[in-house]
Amino acid sequence: MSFATVTYVALRWLRPVHYVVVTFFYGFFSIIECFIFSAITGTLELPQTIEDWFFAITMATLAFLGQSCFTMALKFEDAGPISLIRTMEVPFTFLWQIIFLADIPDIWR
Image (cartoon, rainbow, N blue to C red; front, side, top):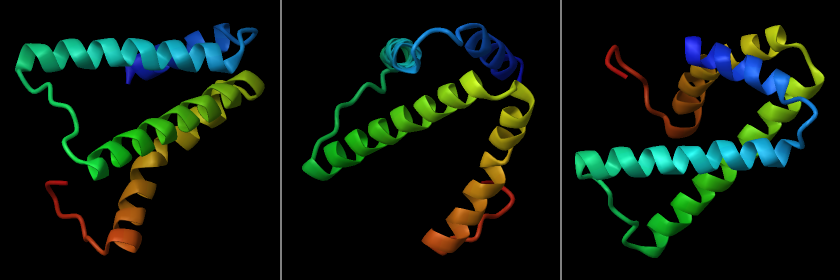
């Protein structure tokens, strides 16, 4: 939770910077971090099929759009309402899991 707070404050401080620059560097450092962690744990593996590549590219695109929208929101709005909306991600994720995947979550997930 403290890292999220630092992120909100840092993005508010970077308000004059164009949102694409912030989003690019966020993704760039995330890729480096994931690569290092995967190399250390020995789980680095590229997608094997066209379907896997499609899902990976789709997830990357949606993550970029989500981070761009979050950065633009912090540029124009106070951090309080945005952090409240971000906390609603978990309940909405469970709700969408039930509605779209017909998968009822249990106590472990």
